[in-house]
Image 1 (cartoon, rainbow, N blue to C red):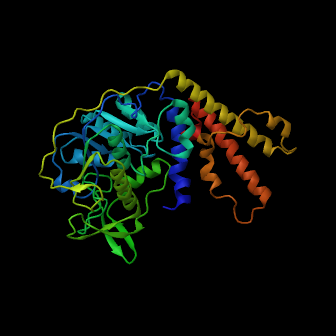
Image 2: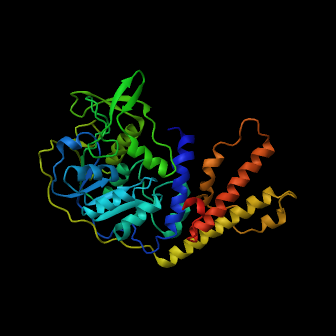
Image 3: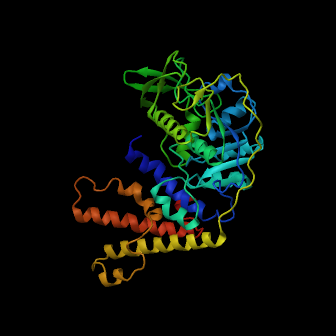
Length: 397
């Protein structure tokens, strides 16, 4: 997916969902305000080897929504599930919750229906993106260096929660040479692949996964993808990978380097990851760790102040855009007196990114492009005010 395609699809919805979720997280615990350390954590990915190797070892099992569903299919359940998808995963959350999952850790940009399904089992985090900087500062909550995926977010949380021993299971970050792409039971877990020249083509029925994307207003992932090659961690065979998996492997290697005091173990059959020591899956890990339960909430006064400040920024953004679109021209004297006119939060203006990315259109004059820019900004900031006040416009219902 290109940067522009990402902005038109996932980023467009992620910024909207973040506004809707921020408006209701006043009384929800924050994942980064954990008051006790968790010494041993197992991170479970949805790679093909999960279906072959995983057995429940001593320690807390932290999965993603994809690997969590695969674990249920195998007769196991995770303790914690980390979710970052902007798709509606409420059905998966309900199934995981009924199976006994005790905690759902949600990106603030997850689909609102996913938040609702998690109920009182949900805690939230703010991922490290520039558009979230002011929100995090106002709430006095650190942003999570969560990488690009739920898997990397889970690893980041494990380090932040004080783990001294982290093990990876099913974190292959590559496809199996026999053709498997993901673990059985995971979304697209029934898919295989075939290499066709310089691209990898997914094969198999993806109807359910595609329909979920479309129902959430997004385009399904492509079936033909450029691929790379990497070696398995025991150097016995060559594996096939794609860019998003390469990025996650690089993130994990950097995380291990930044945390030399943590014992990082890779029990997966996939690629080797620098800094993560290979260990046979038959060796049990030390000690059982109870699920973290002691999460604090943000200060209510700071939360209320943050909401007021973000609404103010959105009002300023809408006012400036409306003035710049005025047929008579902007009232420069008035704009000079608008408090915060030069310090408007990107939290709300980011909602216009999916429109701004395609400006200018071919054949547009500079004046036409300017009108489109300020119209998009005005509409984004207007919607932001409604969402932050808990009013959901019809197009998002």
